[in-house]
Structures are given as structure tokens and as C-alpha cells.
Amino acid sequence: MISKSEALRIAHQDASKMYRDLSQYKVTAVLKEGNWQVDYELVVPEGAVMAGGGPHYLISGSSGEIVNRRFEQ
Image (cartoon, rainbow, N blue to C red; front, top):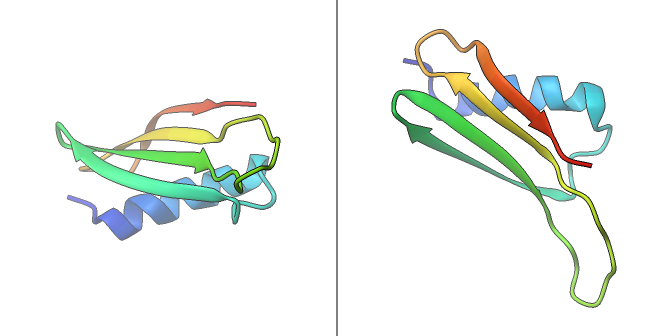
């Protein structure tokens, strides 16, 4: 079983290819049914008008393989 930090590293490495600056995202990782669900949610400062989303991953808990990825724009 891969660790939470390893799942986050895998997701971050992949997401960095599409999103240059990931610092504006809140990242969560939850173990569900043996796989890591890693979600990047855009943090919008109060009063700011911003639209968009971030990457979402399903990473195999046993192999670390990216099972599914989805990018919101």
C-alpha cells in the first residue's frame, strides 16, 4: 500500500505538467476502497472573482498507478 504522501507526490508530479502554479489550490487526499482520491480545489480569496477548477485523481493504493484523472478548467 502506498502512503498518502506518495499519492500526493504522484498527483503533484502529473498535475504540474498541466498547471504550472499549484500554490492556489487546496489539496486533499482520501483513501477510499483501497485507492487514493486526490483533489485540487481552487482557493478563492474573499471578494475575488475567479472561475475554474483543478485536477482530480484516483490513484491505485497498491501500485501508485493513476487510474483516472480529470481536469477542470
